[in-house]
Length: 319
Image (cartoon, rainbow, N blue to C red; front, side, top):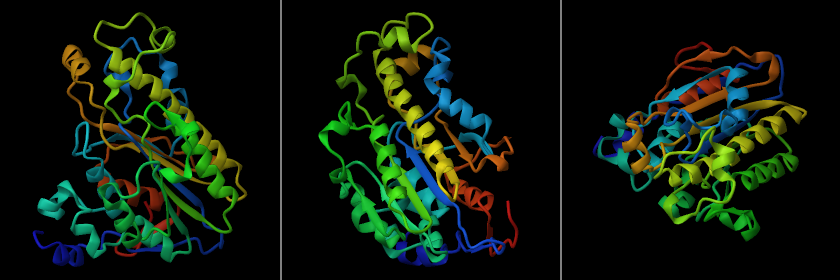
């Protein structure tokens, strides 16, 4: 896969879909949230308050499927997980391009979940509250099938939570997109709030009492700051699910972490070595299966599409 053009052409069959919703012209809305540095931090330290992820817990319990995501990256390299999800291609298929697929590989065009849903009649939108040119996403995403790219210019300083645009402001922006939609939407969100470096922020009064069952060990300030942001991610997921359910045509929510956060002193003192993140896929109320399964990022989008009622032309079956 050293020649990106040849590799892209050869591997372009990861997504070939057809809608099986013959009984209805109504396609479900789909929101995918790639949550920056998201994972269940309660695995690191037993003294974290369970309520930190109360919405995530409730959604997981009600989900069609949930589990761990076996991501290739630790603490950084968001685009590795991101492109694997969008393209359905495993890292090995990209060869040397796996470390930054947007620099060359993706520019030759590969089918993605966005391009396939666009063919089915969806408007495809990426919401990323950061500089559009970072990783050249503004150049690459139209090639990958996105109609619109909503970047940090769509937000204001009031939307900041720490150094980055907050997750709750992102949830409001997504709700705005659906309020103005005239047809089915596929919205792919790349959040920023939990992005480090966390040591540049300060623990606020009341944080430790609110986030832990007992006083955290010394040297856990970065985890405390992370947990404060993680609560906002949790609230965002709850808001997005409620928003989707309130629409005339309900939809599907998929959320996953791109990699674990950088918390070196916390990991070393707790002996934590598991770099897997967490994911869930939840659909309309009547479609709850509660399955538990661990995936690689490149398998997740296909699972979402099958659950949402699409079939893979190659397989000829639904998930």
